[in-house]
Structure formats: structure tokens, C-alpha cells
Length: 394
Length: 98
Image (cartoon, rainbow over all chains, first blue to last red; front, side, top):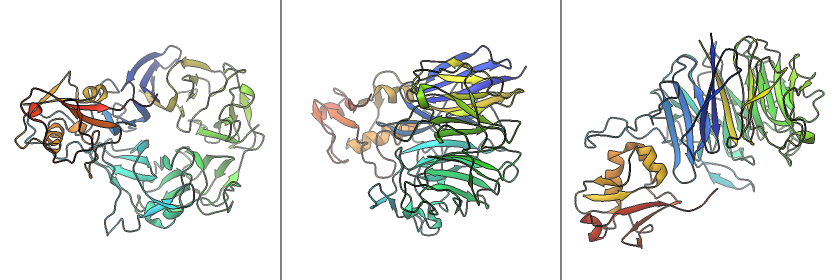
């Protein structure tokens, strides 16, 4: 029978939950890296036992962890204790080095970005928000960082190089941090054409490359953000998350700061599909594994009050690719619930029926084994959940 | 032999218990001890000082013989008690956060 592995990043460590295909009983393993902020863990589609994790700390900075046995054991790539320090392997101890490209050839435009007050400020590495392994090569992996940039490793995370065409494409000096920092939080690879990738930055917007990351362009036409000087600006939109179904890589769904949006031409043009949502502020958005027009969001009251409307935790599902939404409440708390659901904290499995999972800042992870019709917590009382990823195992 | 103590989380990262013992050639400075520490435990690179600038991370401090050495230059020669292994170089995390 198939199984499911849920990878949780929390404010105080990582947890790994496993279940068989019934998804009724869950084993909780952790905390891994107890006490550290685990922003994101994600497994390689090409080798499910290869998992990458972003581990951060205000004291000790950034670390990258890698497991080759499905999360049982972990190592910092290239960071092994050396019996003979005089003969270090090459490279050693560089898996947490994210140096912006300042070379004359490829990094020349990389100077400053906009600060909250409109002044310019140099880019400064803070942490890795999102890790995206290649669909086909376990040793190739991308990292989205704060201050916003995308990095790539082709040696299993031992070393990282910036794909500097993103920051260097021209609008970089206009990018400004959102309230959570200027983070590159979403990386989506078109599985049929891996030279095409989408990324999103708070609060710059969405961007696309069609040549494997050498060149990028903003894809924000149709977004309207009333809280910025030009609501229709080319960049400056606070995109919270973007999702894509692998069978329809030109169709994208976006949870913007406010507004749920949709594009059917790879981001060239967006239109709003908030429809009958009670509030269209939120962070997560995801797509059903088998129905590319079935999407899920968790509406949040407002940008001033980051919790569900009326204290009722409701997932909203649209089976029409947006506009027409139904509230999913069976098994979710319908009073006195004041948690948030952060942007990387929803994921789906690919079993039949599709499983939907999301984590809250209150430390609960809710799951539905029937595409959202019914829900139950599969773990609760964890630290605040920062990210949720799901692996469907053979 | 130079004795070094590092914070709990870094001991876990380096998979060590208690003090770390290093062989460091004279002159024994903050820089040479940290170089030796990172050479033996590459997973610690970037966690105590920046990869490129080699500046101490803001929430870490260096102490020895009850003296705060955090703001001493990298080539500051450590006290004789540290050089002789009588006292450790203490790398300490600031008390902050939640």
C-alpha cells in the first residue's frame, strides 16, 4: 500500500509525519534540529529519500541540511567532521554560503533595492525561505532567499550559485520588502519544460524565466494593488503564493496580499477569481492533485488581523478554477480559532482521493483524505508551523 | 592544545560533547583558533563568523579568563592560560529571543 510522508518546518524544529495510504494513523517523528527555525523541507521528486531542509537561527545564521534516507539521518552537505583537517575535501563547509553574484560579467547590475522608507539599501542575505529540488535530478536544487534572490546547486547542496539574471533584469532597485521581509518564497518548475520557471517575491511580484534562469521578466499584468503608489505597477505587488498543476503548466493560481488571481498564459496576464470568498486576503493556495481546476485557499480576515474571519477556520474550495467557492468546515474549528496559515503551509498528496494538508501558527496540522470534504488534525500542539510539504510514497 | 567551548546548538551541529580540543601553532590568535576550529568541523563555517568578512556574528561573544574578547581584532593573541590549555576560549551565545 502507498504511504504518505509529511514534512513540517516549524518555528522550533522539523517534524516528519508518516502514514499508510489510509491516512488514518500518523507517526510523528521529531523534533529534528530542535530549537532552530525550520523554514522549509522538501523532498526530491526523483529520489524521495533525498530531502533538503532550510535551518536558520538568529544566532548562528543559515544551514542547509540534507537527508538521503527519508529524514532518518541528516548532514550538512560538505560539512562532515574531518579526521584530517589538513586535507579538507573540496568543497567543505560551504553549503550555507549564499553569496550574491557581484562579478562584472553576470552580477554587474546588483547594487541596491528599495527599503520601507523608499531609500536604497544593499542586498543582504538573511535566510532561505524555500527549497525546490529539480523534478529529475536529486543533486540539482534551487533556493529562494531573503533578501530576494534565487540560488542553484548542482552538487546536492554543497555549494550554491546565484542565478543573478533575476535581480539583474532591471527592476531590482524597485523591489521593496513586505512586512515579513523581502523574501523569494515561491519557486515553480514546469515539469515538461524545465527551462521555464516561475518565482514570486514579497513585495516585488511574480517573475518567469524561459531559458533556465539566465533571463527573467516580471509577470504582473492584471494585478491591482491599491496599497502601492501605482496599483497597476510592473513590480511592487505583494504576491503571497503561487500554485500550478503539473498537467497545465500555463495556468497559474495566485494568492496575492488581497485578491485571488488566475493566469492562463503563463503569467502574462492575470485576472481576479476571488468570486464569493468572504475575504480574499490570505497566504496559501494549492491545486488538487488530479483536478487542475480544483483549488484551495484559506481566507484570512485582513492584513491587519492575521486570523480566520469570525474565528472560524475554513478552507475554501473552487471546482471551477476560481470565482465559485465553497466553504469546507467539517472537522475544522468553527469558533474561537485565531491562528494563521502561512504561505508555504499547504500541500497535497497524489493518492486517490487527493489528500490536502495545512499547518497553522497554532501548531496544528489538519488533513483531509477526501479532497477537503472532511478534516482532522494529524498532529497538534507543535510550534508554529512555517511550511508543509507532502511526499506520496510508492 | 587549545580548549574551546561552543554553544549547545553548535555542539549538536558538530556532534561533539563538551569541550573541543585543537592543535594550533603559535601565535595563537582568535583568528588562528577559529580557523582551526572550522577546518576540523567544516559544518561550523558561517555559524560563528561570516564566510567572507570573517566578522563575528552579532549574537555571539568570545570570552577567555573572564575577559570579553569579542571586540578584539582577529589577530589578538589569546592569553597565556588559553595557549597553555589551562583555560578555554569560550564562544557564547547571547541571551536573547524567545
